[in-house]
Amino acid sequence: MEKYKIVMLGEKDHGKSTLLANLLIASKSVSHERINEVKNISKKNKTRFEPAYILDAFSEERDLGMTIDTTRANIAYKNKLIELIDVPGHLELIKNMMTGASSSEIAVLVVSAKKNEGFKLETKRHLFLASMFNLKTVIIAVNKMDELDYNEKIFNRLKKQINDFLNMLDIKIKPIFIPISAYDNENLTVKSQKIKWYNGKSLLETITGLKNNKKGNGKNKNKIRVLIQDTFDENNKSFSGIIYSGKLIKNSKIKILPKNIKAKIKSVSFLNRSSKSSNLKNVLISFFDKDLGVKRGDIIYDLNSDPSYLDKFRAKIFLINNIDLKNLKNIKIIFNNNEFGINKINILKAISPLSGKLMDLKKIIKPDYSINAEINLNCRYPIEKFNEFEEFGRFLIFNKNKFAGIGIVF
Image 1 (cartoon, rainbow, N blue to C red):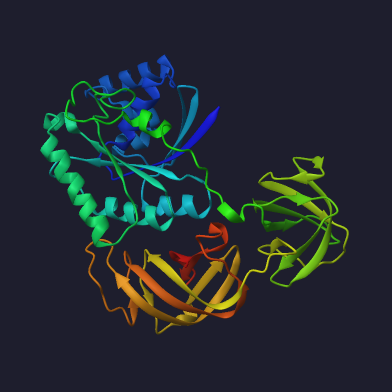
Image 2 (image 1 turned 180 degrees about the vertical axis):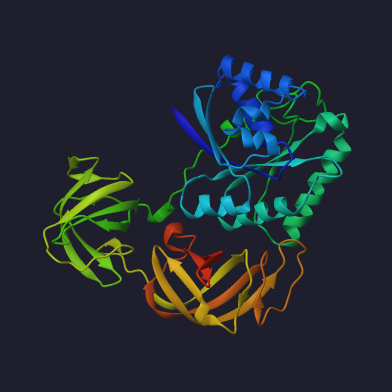
């Protein structure tokens, strides 16, 4: 069965939880018992039936009127499996994308068409981060159209507002706009008869009609890239790792950077099953050689690969906290569990993703800015461009041991 992974984005109160819940109900992916339970809760609270309660795992969430945890839900639709990954806010999106938890190329961004809700701060952040993380397709689900009598002019006005914002910031996303009513289940699984002016497909029809390209490394997919996670024996011969690209083959020779160690693979196994080769994501690798000096964060390459050893590179940065450029000793950058200090940061361009205005940030790097910078590390490390190997071209930024932001190498 073909599987789609969809990252679900949207501001609080724009109807994302309602959309998720009604997709579950419409696809018969939730039990009648659970639906009746929600009906009883709604009755107890003296409110109309609230589908969003289906997703709430804790009673405290219902009391606060908000969802506080990431939700994953699977639905089956026309012999296709769709995994919906609910991301409550931009910090959760950063965490999901940096850890590879979503590994998705498709996002659904829920935006309320109501005047007092509409195109707000969190929506702008999500659009910017979607482009930064190279999400190929962003579907804008324009919600609450039922409360606006399915007005085409309001839909087109919001559509223009979002497109103008993308053009202003030169964000390379061409979104698909779909008018919906999450609460009334309009245009979710089948084309709505109430939106006569809309000529496109329903939300699920649109998703499953997309080319389902899973995130990969394109032309580099056969090159070996394995991140060492841990060592398992006292002789330093066996290691756990994550395969991001290529295959590990028994008796083949590889090299391990940054120390440029050459070694021969003795075995490759997954869940205690031995194999001559493996393209599985999580593996246990053993080598013939003893005391290799390999550590967590090292990277396995094929012998023909020659990644660049860099101490200077250009990056795009998104921060959630201020960074003082006069106190670089407080700033740390982490590539694949390897921590580096910074000798210099040269700001090339700083644009507000919220207003599109260029800013001069010479002393303080502010949050919510799209920043192009040239960074000098305190040592050399094998760094690759994000558009070639995503996992090895992105990094975390910490300031005074507190998470401050993310970056990608370009």
